[in-house]
Image (cartoon, rainbow, N blue to C red; front, side):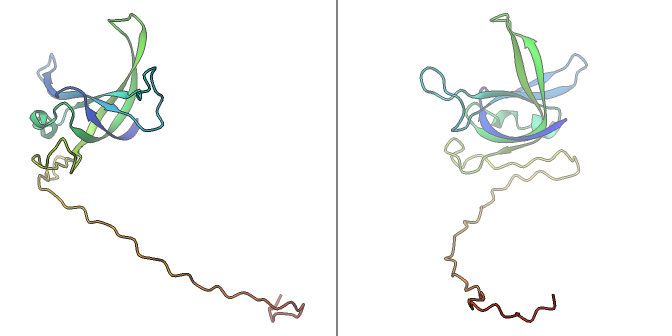
Length: 163
């Protein structure tokens, strides 16, 4: 299985669903694109679509916060699934992630600082951190050049090396 770390925006509100056996799970779709991604005929970037699923109870409890437009970071197992589209009848590829971790992107405009940054781990014994953290700013300091000593003599004298 491949591990994937993905940053993207939620396309539609997350949903809590139940299997036929009565097991609950969370699912939502995520869009991701980057500057160098291909563009459509209108010049807009073509996003990659991902389906995120989690069986973890702590993720299911986040359903009301995982709303359309929110930027999130998802870490999980990745696999492709092939399916026939009901709309077009063509075979398509579904990019699926089984989430180990779901994190909100801190300081984004859509969060407005009102939602806590939540870190969730797959380990059930680990506590869930729901406090805001401040990321320290890194400032660069000027680098002073160092003088490297080199032999500038033009003589062919031995330099006292034993070989």
